[in-house]
Length: 436
Image (tube, rainbow, N blue to C red):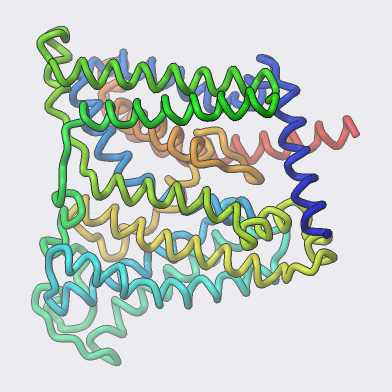
């Protein structure tokens, strides 16, 4: 009964927040996202880069990075904040890659071997992280960040000193000339594009199919809404979704017949989407939606809302939090595999270092916060964050004559947006407390 009451309370609070919609409130809640939309548009114009180049690069980056960003959602749902320890999941993936590369397994079989082998490492790491974060309730983000630094030290000790001494390994391609330690850079010919090259489809067909699915979804929601007397804001939302589906459908048809496009846009018809990689991202999105509707997902939400109420309701809070962080760690390992198979090169001691920072910056730019993150915010954040990454060096060169300024700006964005978002979250909490 307590669980049912908790679920009703959550749904009522969500309903109340939907009904109190206003433009002022929307802009206040999405000020970071709005700022970055303006920056992206301005940067794209200032950079003078061809639309095809920006779109092609963005498509690659979306399919390459989205899985990692989506791996952050479940810990936020469980009230554990932004999981900086996904860097440890990335380490699990890299350990698996080095083992599989040493064994000489190539192609899609090599990729699947990495995915399977990374799971036990990620589960063990996730359990250890979860136990630590259960001891540091209320300070999970800083604890996970420091844990990532500590784990990085152990990771470097493993591959710099233990491999070749305590761990016997003879491989001229992987090992340093001294026979102790793994090389700094490893060419991932074995698994390069193993997922991306399986099946590629013209973007026009993807847009048409996506448009049809979105229109069907919007119309279905409108039909259900009319039967159940949904709030006006919900109807407007579904109409906007349906219209966006129509727009995607029209754009897809235009790309199918490029003769109707202007000359500078015809080349966009040549864009192709790696279907299997995109499908992996879609499957993770579906997983995040489905898990919320399960008993475990409801436990995540209840623990995230109030740990005391969850405990009184009979939920094992520590176990639930541990499961959330373990799932996130496993997903981060798979996300790193998708990232590296597209990149084609493994920087043994550096590929994982910035993973957490960039993923968290992306989800925050999309409008997420320490206490709330959705799939839409994650994907929007990836688009905005990487659009700025693409255009900022060229924009800086056009505006200031030095592309290096754009590189500095990108690093400033990654760290600055995290600081600003955390500051805004604290400010909003203070305002809410004052209103009470």
